[in-house]
Length: 103
Image (cartoon, rainbow, N blue to C red; front, side):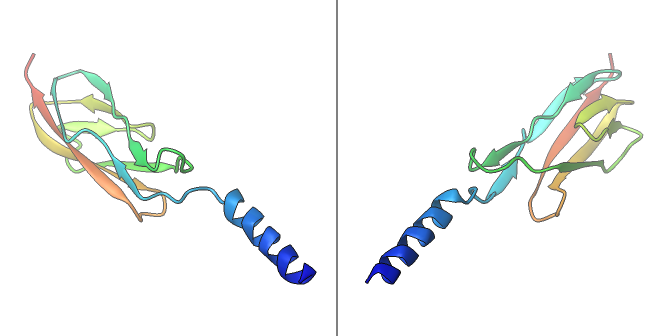
């Protein structure tokens, strides 16, 4: 009986000690900006208690807008592009459409 109780206590400690697993990431669906403007994309994650992963950012048209490793978008010229965001392990992803307008 003592062994069973001991095993149950250990399992309870292990279960309580685990970090919540990431379920999804998200960002705003679109941005309207002007040529020359810089915008920092914020990425949220669910559950909020989960460890914040590293993110990868990629613009599908760098002539319209570029994005750096920190998620700062620089609007280069008039047009539309999509900024793709993924977790470093690529398990989760989201995207933001950037509409760049003339000044």
